[in-house]
Image 1 (cartoon, helix red, strand yellow):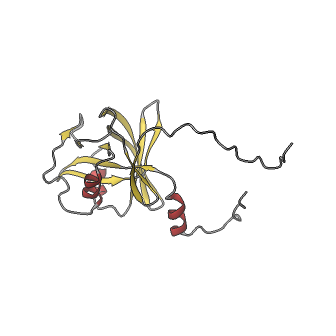
Image 2: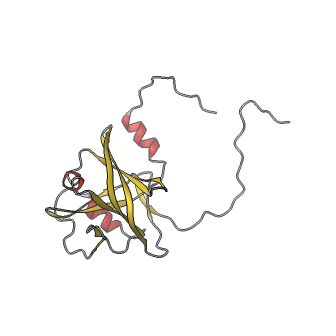
Length: 184
C-alpha cells in the first residue's frame, strides 16, 4: 500500500499531467456557429453532469483562440469522435486556419456544425461558464442528440489516441488486500 503524500505537498504540473495520462478520456470536437462562420476545437475533458435536467460539461483551456467567439453564441454541439477520425482530430486540434475547409457537415437544430462519421453528437444550450484554474468549465443543457450506430469512439490514453474495440473479456478479478486484515 502506497503512502499518502503529506498534506500541503505541491504537485508539480508535469507529474500531475503524467499521472492523469493514465485516465482514458473521450475525444470530442466542440463546434458552434459564430458571427464569423463555423468554429470548432478539440476537447478532451467532456463529462456528463446530470440526467434531470440533461446536462453535460466541457473544460476548455483559457488559452484557446477558438473558444472566445464560440462562448458568446449561447449554444454548441459536442461531436464524439469515432475511432478512425484521427485526421479530423488533427484538423480541429491545430490553432487558426479554416478548420471547415473542404469538410462536409450538417447543421444541428440550433445551427451548429455536426461532423460526419462521429460516434455521437449532442446539441447543447449553455447554462453557465465558470473559470476554474487555467480552464473554463461550460455547463450546457442537451436539447438534441444522436448516435451513428455502433461506431466505436476514439479515446485518449497515455499520450496517444486509441480505439475502443469492445467489452473487455470477463476475467476473475484479484481482490485488493484489505488494510489491517491478514490471512485467516
